Image (cartoon, helix red, strand yellow):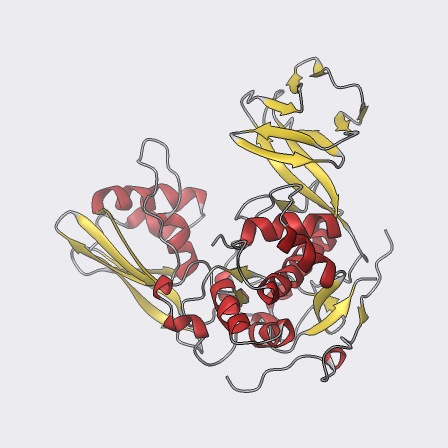
Length: 417
């Protein structure tokens, strides 16, 4: 596939020139990264791992992970994988290199793993022989402008401002395009359909989602002519995180638009920004211990009790980047904040499910009796666009350009076509 750079564009309805770059001076579900590698913070401005855009891509969305013979249906037809091959009653299917391709002739209901969505695009069932003879992934190939409404319907409330939908559409389009470019030759899918990537509900009828996708068609965020992975979260809690600290130390993240912004966010005034949770201290200690191997964080295995969790290192905006877990002898284990949060939210065999959710790494926790009580701010990793903040700014009459200007400093609005 030939890689081409996006074209800069200007919006005629706005007086200022977006194509020159949007720069800031001064100061629900969440998009998360697939990489959790720690490392030294790279120099801001390095972009050796950032690739050009492939134009207007077809996004490969993994909508199901079939591992233990779970029921998969497309319309009235069931799809199964056996040791002898594929079994289905669908007529419009082909098999290539062991993959099963289903081509719906109309919009059909897809159901798997207690999830249901309408689909009308090609579905590829990819065997996962390295897992088992029955395991496969279900991947739907969706042109990006058809993909965006399904994301907006999953990420935002239907009654939110049109401008919020426009800002989210551009962020989501940028994120998906960037991941497609990065993964096209490395993986059989670009994104998942849930919070580990971005929500995708399939073919949707929500008019607000289609209107925003159409009014921003082809528009993406770029830096130095390259589409950026425009991360976003439900609520930043008032202070920005950097992608380097909160996502990974990849050089892709070491660019100004993903390094946060100064000043308090407008979401600071919202009640939803703060949260609390209570869990069994002993259970959470066992959960942390269990994550030592799965998360490649051997420090977790040394914890024998949890007395408190406290921030130790902060970024330039006041958001914690490292947390210390103190035991009853006041001995501390310091770990990156994102890894602590991931561990507390990890499902572990033979332990209760991790509820209530620990919503962000901007937190403190103290043991009271046998209970560990958490208090935190924000919903999600805090990188990039804050959905609740964008909604507040839209309500004050801000344009989607100015909203994106605030959340992605130094970025440019460009066109994929």
